[in-house]
Length: 306
Image (cartoon, rainbow, N blue to C red):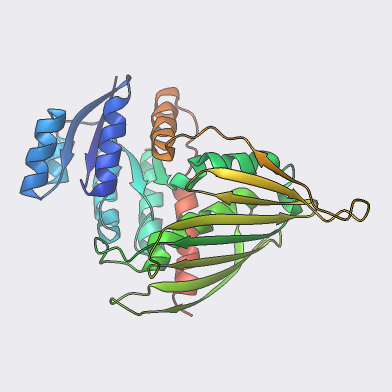
């Protein structure tokens, strides 16, 4: 049995707890949070100890840990867990900036301890279906992504670019199998102290153009992607997990054709955590690496300086 723990019991941390608890080959051995009410609730629900510090938790020698803390705490928690030879799944983003991310990746490499990033959209059935349709990443002309949501009062330490667009920068790299060579952004701050509305433009090394619209000023949630290829266009809703493939205009039939691509709905977080645990058990490569997380931070460093 794999002994696992979770640090940070906010919304995402509790999702990790629930999913780990449902896995037959995993034993939850503890968690960390400083909120007294949360600690009591989790201790009662899962029958595990909830500590006030990561140091106390690590005395139980977990095999793996999910770090679901605010971004500014990622570096210190990640370094402490890695020094204890504990495999880490770090919720996105890897750290607050590239410098911190480099420290985490370097230590994981030095200690030979697995460090995986929680870029959960890679496990979304719609993204998986798009990836399977793409026979050649070089056939992608452009990717357009919309990720918008109401203002999140629970997030105070970062802006919308760091909180939301990390998913989409990673999606662009994943689908194109290429790094980002050019990036720029326009953004504004309207409600809080960080940017809450942004347009991001990217160009990959294999010359795919990408545009990301993201903001916290919507009355509703929307997660949509359009991938324009040389021979067809794909549209997907990442919430409903529905996906459509459109042909280009036919000069013969004077029309387009559209087909819905079947997908089987599943919870992406469960698939992500299962992949993490399986990689540890089988000593196989992680599906998302610390270097993948670092690549996203490099884009942040560029666009947030402009």
